[in-house]
Length: 155
Image (cartoon, rainbow, N blue to C red; front, side, top):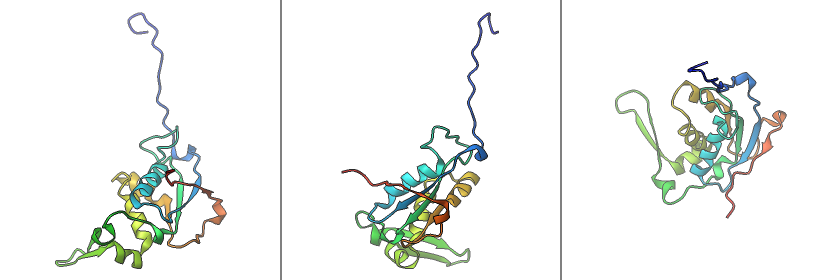
């Protein structure tokens, strides 16, 4: 009782990772725009689409992305977008364009796009493990019975 008035308690409910009901979703990346797809996937992995969203815990779902080699980009990004890596040694910087990366490791393109939209801390490193990306149609997660999720825009 503060100042003679009854104070109604308002408590924020924090969900633990074990209490979150995690589902598996299957997303087909064929003819999807890279950035728009990645932002929607990051929202699902983070759990922001759920009413039980808690910013400091893993309450999101698992996402399986298939057909990563058939993803689209807009403009001249196919030739201009670059992936930069460094070996740690002097002169060890390697620059790879998107079209070369698509031929070499198409899963890496979607993985890096989603990773860049997650938090840059230990939670983000844990959340990116909930993303499974495959270049073709096949994936080894049939036992999890993933629900097909359509993320395309309605135009």
